[in-house]
Image (cartoon, rainbow, N blue to C red; front, side):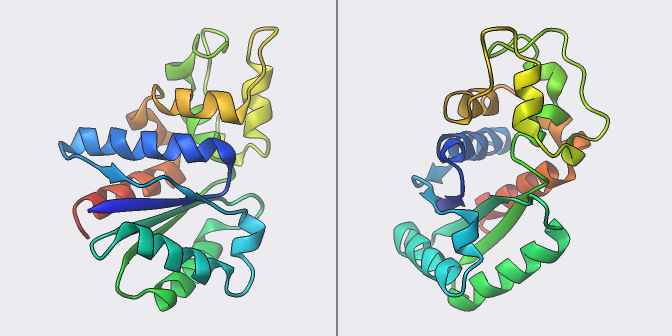
Length: 193
């Protein structure tokens, strides 16, 4: 079984397979992760673009493939947008296992939710205290940059996959409901659900 990720950012292209494999390792299974399909979030919201992307992912994944769409919620409420996107995706390919996760508000909020575990990594200060509500931060990339020692600043294409490989998954699940959903949906797909 192959999981085909659909992501919006350049950093997620490398980071999401890392997360899927880490979750699979915890489960004691081997994950086959196709190279992610990167599509801008604004394009996926347009009529037929999500459906076209889901069709491509279905062809890449083959008959037993699953599709995992991960987008930043930005200003949208995940509880409203995700079900609408999932309905459209399933209408396009009802024969595939599809999950849609919206990181609230950004992917990087997941790192902030587990901030103590990334202290001292990738130029970040140490110690590093977590934010009270990591998912409420509107500029998670900026939050990370502000906590990096000079001359470092957070760069999605360089730092995201590296931090995805080391942040504490359990801590992130506790402090980030959207990461917990990502975990549960990934686990479900890895089990064939």
